[in-house]
Length: 407
Image 1: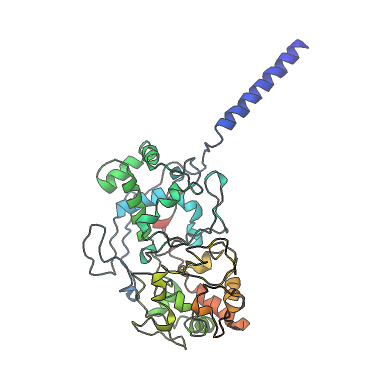
Image 2: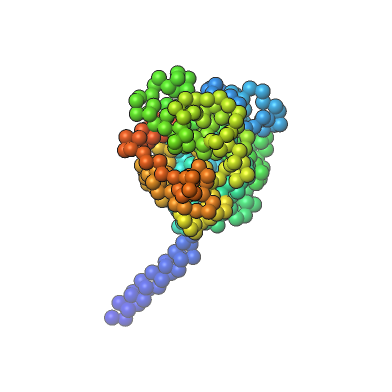
């Protein structure tokens, strides 16, 4: 009997010690992610050399990363060794404090580098207050995040890493030490920068080079521009005409080749605003389609989602006007992911815009009430069909932007 009691006491002690050890180490999670990246023997070329002609004049940066003037913006110069390093960093869970979250955790390639949930799960299971925005042609935007608080990619890249909800790595110095102790980062930094030293600036610059290379310009729409949209079917053509019409004024907010707010350099190209019949127009006049009105608000607008906003965005319910490229892949939609389908988004603009003192002028009727477009079911389907022509399948399958930790 005494032996049985001793055995039971011993078993309980072992169990208690196991629980205590687990409790002390509960934040140290062993990731199922591969620990070493698989990279090709020859570095991939991250400088896009086949940017279509209709992008000419739309790229924002007049200088390359070394400060040299770029006279031909059809050939964007990217440092491929830095971009390769940036790709590895983007997908590496080590960038989070407990090795569980990477940038790609909330920006998935198959989803147009968005997250297919309304709010992303971050560090220690914490939930982000806003939907993760898609990453598409970030080089063509100088206002980033839903509240446009970052004015450049360089200012964007380390915010999620240091955020206490998203990745929790508040000390970049600790991150530098962590990366320098791996078997592969010293070599990658050597190739990119000529020395193995891991620093905050080098981490940020490498991520910036990777994001700068993430350009999407091979959608059905892009092919259509080159052939007067002979590749569009009847429904897509109807949707295009509606999108560029005065009736819907979709292109007043989502303009230029990036279908985003004309929020600074890069979106001055107004060729793709369209007239009342949906034809392309060439003009420098922002006119009734918006343009200049979004400079002061840094590319944000109040689109009447609520009468009272809990999250005020940049202020008074103004949120970043995102690019519509790959919009068919990036559900759910809006800053809080409230809409699960494009049909719901279209229904909002058609009948459900809420009154607000800061409501964008495009959505106000002459009596100052929210406009109603009164689209037919066919017209709604046509708009949705057009939006799907902005999907670039090659972008979401491009190996250069894929997870290097997976074979």
